[in-house]
Structure formats: C-alpha cells, structure tokens
Length: 619
Image (cartoon, rainbow, N blue to C red):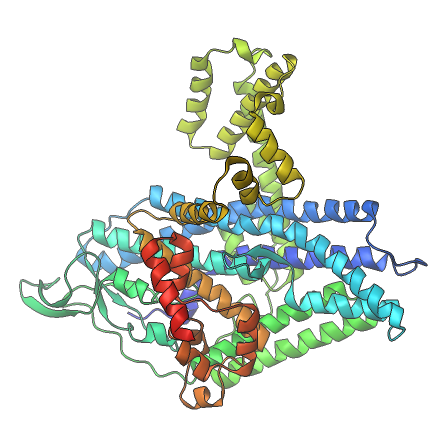
C-alpha cells in the first residue's frame, strides 16, 4: 500500500521543472544587476542610477522574464495534466484486481486548476521586473553611503551589498498581507501544491466513477504533526463516518470498516497541505490491509534540516553568480561544494533521501530533440540543480514553443486572409465562424492570437475615424486615469472620484479574488482554508530561512514541538515555544490565525467580529 518515497519524488518532477526555470531566472536576473554594477566600478563618480542605465537594465530583465513566461505556461499546464493522469493511473492500478479499467479524462476542473496555477505563478513576473531595478538602486545607494565614510572601497561595498541580495534572492510576489517572497520559492510552492492536488483529484474522481467511495491514507517514513494523525486511516469521499458494514470486494461477506473522517475533513485539518508527500489509495473491503508503521532512522526534523541545506546551496549558487571578481566567485563556489558535501553526509547519517534534482546529474541524453515535452519536463525536474543541463533542456523547449507560435501565426493569417482591411465591413457571422473554428480545434493559444488580430483590425478601423479611448471615455474615467498616472493608489483614485469607501472596495476585491480561486464544489470557507494553508507554507519557508531553521526555543525542542505548528493556532502556545529569532521575524511579518485570514479574505461581518475577539484575547 505504501508508496516508496522514490515514487512520490518522481511524481513531483514536473513541479521541480517549473521551479528549476524560476531559480535559473533568478540567477540570471542577479547576473544582469551584477554586470550593470560592475560596469560602474571604473567610473569616477557614483551618483544615482541614470536613465540610460536603468533603461538597459529593464530591457535585459524584460528579456529574462519574457523567456520565463513562454516556458512556465507550457510547463505548468503540462505538469498539472500529467499529475492528473498519474492519479488516474494509480486508481486504475488500485482497481485492477476488480477488473476495473475505466479512467477519467481531464475535465473542466483540471483545466481550471491549470489556468489558476499559471496565473498564480505568473503573478511573480511583474514583481521580478520591479525587484531587479530595486536591487540595482538599493545597491547604488548603499555603496554611496559606505564609500563616503572611507571604511570600504567601492568594490568591497558593492560586493557586500550584492552578496546580501543574493542570499535572499529576487523577490517577485507579495501576498495579501504585504510580505514579499523569492520568485523561485513561490513558484516551487505553487507548482507542488497544484500538481499534488491534480494527482489526488484525478485519483479520487476515477475511484468515485467506478463506485469506490473509501480511500486510505498512505504512510511516510517521517511526517509533520498535522499529517501524522491521518496516516493509515480510512476516509470516505461522500458517505458517512463511523463503523460501517461494507460488502467484501472478493466475496459476498460483509466486512466491518471504521471510517474515521471524510476526505474534505482531513484536507481541512491539514492533510495534503502544500508540500505534503501523502497520497490516498483505494480501500477495498476484505482486500486492502492497513499499511504498517515502518520505522525510519530519520525524523521530521532531519528532513527540515535537509531543506535548509538545500536552500543554503541555492543561496551559494546565487552568490557565485553575482561575484565581481574571481576570488569571490571561488569562495562562493567552494561554499556550494561544502554544502553539497554536507547534504550527502546528512543523507547518509539520517537516511533522508537526497532530492534527485540536488544529486550529481548524470549525462543528459543526446537525443533531447526526439523526446516528448512531458519527458523533457521530467528530465528538467531531475536536473534542476545543474545550470548547464537546465539551459540545454530549456533551449529545446523554447525552440519548440517558437515553432508552435510560428505555426499558429500561419494558421491565423490564413484564417483572416479574406477579411477586408476595413473591419467595419466585416459581418458578425464571419467573425463568429472564425472564433468557432479555433474553439472547436481546442487551440486556445491560436484562438487568442486570432482575437488579438481581430482587435488590431478593429483599432485600425477606429483610428481611421480619429477615435481614441480618452475622448470616448467619461469625465470620471479621465479623472481616475489622471490620478493613477499621478501616483495615486487605484482604489483611492476610484474612491475619490466616485465618492466610495476605499476600504470597502479593497474588501470586495479580496472577496472577488477568493471567488476566482474557487474550485468546483468548494465553499468559500473551504477556499479560504486552502489559501490559508498555501500562505502558511510560504510563511514557513520564509521564517525558516530568516531564523536559519531555529523556529523553536529550548523548551519547545525538549517537548518535540514542530516549528511549523507555531505559525498558526493559539497565540499563547506560539509565544511560549517560539525562538527569539522567530519572534523577531514576527515583528515585521505578524502571524495570522485562520480566523484573521478569513476575515481579511472574505470580509464578512461575522468573520471580522471573530477576528476582533482573537486580537483582544492576545492583549
């Protein structure tokens, strides 16, 4: 019943492929900043950033992000679909002894999940562009201040400032609470979450379609406290919990089965959280045996130490990327080499397996061009720690994307060849026929190109009539536009012109965001809980990095407290067992309970009252 850890790791290769291109882009953006600063070192002055300099920096950063967008869209979509198919195949394998072979194709639910994940990951792109300029400007400012004191040379000050930014990476995503996260860390978390969910949902949908309601939770060699209570337990997808009599899958006998919760209850309680390695298998009464507890020499704390070493390794590689001279680069590379050695030693001593994308990669196949996109994505996930391998694989994927784009351009050009240049003379029926043609073909990218071309022609027709959106808009629209252009916040601009409450508008926007993340069958509370789990996972990554893994104080360590559990739940317990480092981090990144998060996300009066009581209880 229990899946080997290697199989679970293999199922995450697609998520690692997405993460690999973001970590690679992060290093590339830091390299762009480093080279721009290195070009300054020989100049006599060190005034603020100059327009031409920032323009060139923005151009280079835009090149990196545009390349990232082309690759990420394809990899995320393919990864979610592949995860669904893996889930379906696992279910078919579970049911094979019953002679069942019916699977479930990808439906609207998995399509929406893929689209939402693409959007979530894409949220970091604009932030990455801004962050690149911010890093450059901040380094210039720090170097100016340090160089004026005479305590450091300009090169020393620049190296020190670059090293600081390389340690934390390029930030490109700000969550609802205003915290910024590394583009690589956020993309990895979002990818892992979506693909794990797709695999589980594909599995459950296939089981349910074949009349199997009961599932059993797998066991892992080591796990967190939230998941440990569910290991080996039987859950129901839609039936009742408690003792049930079920017909044996291999005879006419009735079998007593203890159902200890629903799948949704387990998920709400934390099972299958972002980064979780657990899965659900079909429970066939009279056939399936509960997985035995398998002792493992490693502990959950050992696994978290491995994660910390892996993050430090990425940091060292970023520092090598931004090094201004050969000596600094050698030091960073030597640190990366030491960390690689520590990872291997920790794996040997603790038994925690080394992630495949952190191992020494084998030689890449010579036939990359002949491999499928899915196989290339799996290969990219396994070679994510090898910059040269990432470059080779992404080059093949990018070339394929360009060829597909060229083919789509040709199809769109052929489709609109008969349309007159004067778009006002094109009948609506002809436009709808074109849209229907591409919709029926299922080519969303070609359809988007078609719509872009139709928009362009419509704008050309309107420009012939000297039309502009500014002239056609209302006086209020023009006022809002001018306020935003002057630097006023969008919500404040609309509120000022239309006499609205900006805080109410923000709450409505937050509520609309939650609605947009809603999966089929989910209630708003379930969406808020899932988004809270994702937020806590990102919080955990950032807090552990800031505290260098020291989340729990001495008393907490004696009691075996898991630091992750301090990020949510009762305030008193968190403050009792949190380390001083974690409390310092909370000063800048206040913790939120689920109640407070729900109040921010949904804005309901009942939630706000509950959140107010929570805050009052802290005093």
